[in-house]
Image 1 (cartoon, protein in one colour):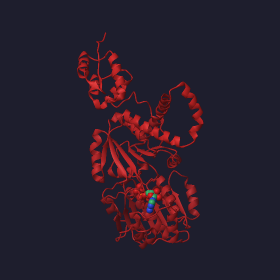
Image 2 (tube, rainbow, N blue to C red):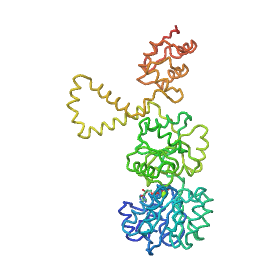
Image 3 (tube, rainbow, N blue to C red):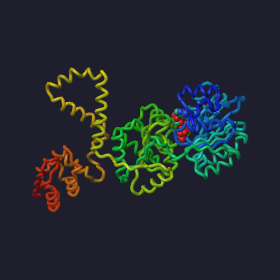
Image 4 (spheres, rainbow, N blue to C red):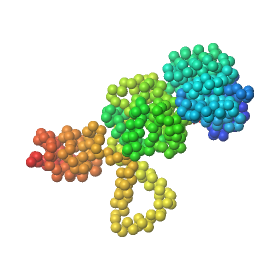
Length: 522
Ligand SMILES: Nc1ncnc2c1ncn2[C@@H]1O[C@H](COP(=O)(O)OP(=O)(O)OP(=O)(O)O)[C@@H](O)[C@H]1O
Ligand SMILES: [Mg+2]
């Protein structure tokens, strides 16, 4: 069956024109199914994966059916967070481009007087958070007694503990002949049951969720880490992947603050977002992130639901989400509208079972990935440098340096010069020289200290393992072996020294015979 076109769904011309301006070619599945049903007048519970255009699915038909009745509010849309209220308001405003519908976002943390003034001038559609809406109802500013539409975006969250009382109170202020619409990417059974109370008996349930609750455009991975290595691991992942925009989720506000501070100390372009920050600060941070002036957003679950930022390439669960719903919404901040994205989750061995449960419940696949080694970082940086060199060479700007480079040619070997420049870029770009705090004493640690000639620092067992493991040996290590020859093993036991000898004597590494002599501590 061919996909339906927007023009076949029954929307009016003004709305179709605006959708066309937005550049959307065809409706998503949820849009194609929900729009006609809403236009017919049904209540709808709509479930579809994150980033599949649910906002337009309810926004377009509401606007299409709009009729002004002086001084009356036509529709109210409730969202769990202030940022989401602003965003949904903006998105619907775009669809309302050729109508004269007036929208207003109302949310806490913003001067109520201004909202009151705007409401007095006449508003058709309100997009708001429950607390502020109730406040305005209480003051007699908002009257919902003749609305045509009530929407609960992120409905399962809105009907959950934190919001249910407010929502019930708001619903009690609404007329009963309205259409009620519930939307979310997750819709647990108990929430659907609860929803019956507020909806008509012929409510349509439209669910587009097929195989897994998560979108297939998001590739999911986990990293197993030790608790004390969490931060180090994160930095390595970021240094290898170089995400252009990433959201990193933490469990607590304090966790957000601490991670932001630690990341800033290492030079990452990062800011935090959580419920204790001023509303201005929250919106500013999100704006910077949207505009691409901020690479990393560290947030609590306030940013987990609904937030739509184009080109978020990575979502990282620095802390494991509390439940499956939170996981689904968090990772849904990437891979939106058929774009690609990756989601990483850091887990300690103790958290592994909880992760497996999430995997089962989402029916997705979360694959294991290994924490990048220093070599991985080195290689990734090298590749990205080569890419940028190639780009630069395709342009013209670098040519102003050609005469100066020619001068360098007289004094230095140009291969050395290139290597020096690369080293300058490398040390500037990695979050820090990964030398001190290496993941719990590993082979890599061994390699590293060999490189700097600090054999005295080494764990003999690891050293042996290192020398044994040919896979670990590459060209660079030939130098190390030479260093090794000259070294006196100061701090290893005699037994260890003997076993090093035994393991290494006569062996070949990269085609070179290993020749080690060990002398006792004096
Ligand atoms: N038909 C379409 N074609 C292309 N892009 C679309 C279409 N409809 C909506 N979009 C865009 O897709 C993005 C995601 O839409 P939206 O935020 O409504 O998703 P959602 O389903 O509400 O996701 P979530 O569950 O995370 O809230 C938005 O940037 C929106 O403008
Ligand atoms: Mg949404």
